[in-house]
Amino acid sequence: MAAPTFALNHMVAPQMPLGAFFKLGKTLGIHQFEIRNDLSGNAILDGTSPYQVRELAAAEGAEIISINALQRFNEWTPAREEEARSLATYAAACGAKALVLVPVNDGSGKLEGERQGNLRVALKGLKPILEQAGIIGLVEPLGFQICSLRSKKEAVDAIDATNGVDRFRLVHDTFHHELAGEPELFPAMTGLVHISGVDDAQVSVDDMRDPHRVMVTDLDRLGNVVQIRAMLAQGYVGPFSFEPFSPSVHATSDVVGLVKGSMDFVRNTL
Image 1 (cartoon, one colour):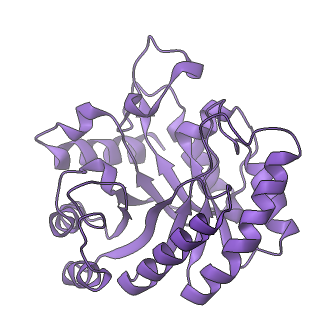
Image 2 (image 1 turned 180 degrees about the vertical axis):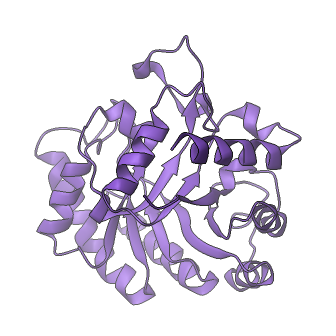
């Protein structure tokens, strides 16, 4: 079985300026990165141009695998289309390979029939925008019960139905996979895997939220290693990107040690 290729999502160290973040990865032997458009005081929100981002990445030999994310992508409105165009243009200009697509997650748009229809409309609208920018759309189902797209199978069916196989891939997120309780993996349709662990022994699976998400350790309750092993065994060859949202991770003074410890644990346990 192939060894996993690790990547870093900027959520590992959201307060770190982009150039320092790329340097951090290089220190760890990581060369693939996800940048975000939701970090105030940091690129992209602070007005950093895509060309500056491209230069910062080039200086450290960094590959930008995605911009994370177009939110509420499956609620396709003129405003959403405009936002998608702007993000896709930015992604292409900064050298990012893909744009992560996050569904509506507030309890709306969930009804049977409605959610499948909304998803197809959005994929049809997104496809020409992504084609023009020359990037991939990474559809990320979320496991939360209030989410309008929980099922990877539903996402794959919609991608097939809209002839989107050349333009869309899935994000397999180990946290959301566990919460959704959907057994199927779709390695051939997966373009990116997000990894994070939950160590808190008290919280029930249904009550798990982003702040519970830490690095992957031997206390992990999400079965990260089992999921990673299965994805590799079934032929997934893409990156495994660390995406912890816990304030405890963001507050650490030793992010290198934290990431290295997690990489070592995963490699040794596989």
